[in-house]
Image (cartoon, rainbow, N blue to C red):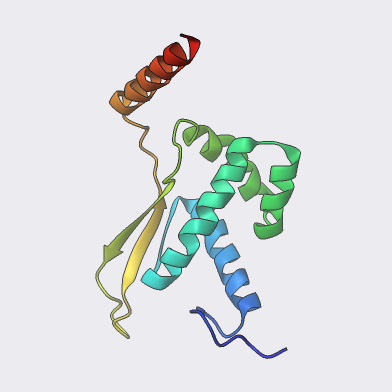
Length: 141
């Protein structure tokens, strides 16, 4: 089958791109942050956030779906126990991309992609609770 001509690709083939993204996701969950090029970080973000969402679900099917991408069982265990617990209150935006200085050799734009470790601000949580309570009260009336 010929290689597709549409859409951006990071590597020579779609299979190679999937493997690169899986390796980067494994490193991200293992170390908490990685330094990579900006296009790679932008392609990694949706994959990493989807994997964290599966980890927050925590059932066996989700674990098996994550194991399809991340082949290291210790990293998957870490993702499902500690990382999912940290992200429990967060409804999205589990990763952050920070641009840094270009690489010295070829001036490729560099970026740091990291897991957001800060808890959700208590003010936002209280506002969401209040909105939910008013919604329930209006529906009850």
